[in-house]
Image (cartoon, rainbow, N blue to C red; front, top):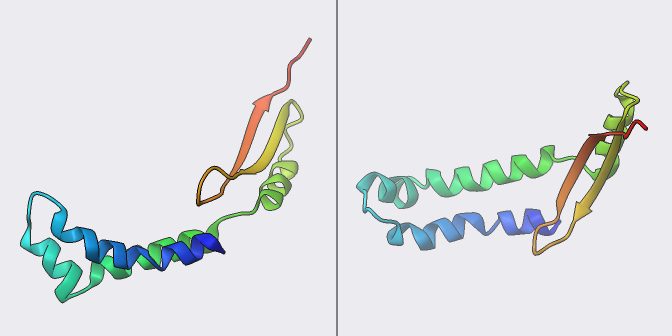
Length: 96
């Protein structure tokens, strides 16, 4: 939920930092302020990315459906800052 809230601020950040981007280009100003396509695209792409993201349980269930017996799967969420990162790691089991 916090991630989706943060995405709502992306357009405002784009509006604030665009004048500071060097080298200066008129098309950048036009697509940000006159026709605000850049802020809209930042918001839309961020929202779509949140909607297609999987939870750690969903990732783990997907890994169970794989018919690979010699791999160990680990799914989790790393909370290291503002945005939590969900991951799925697969590595071969040791054969001894």
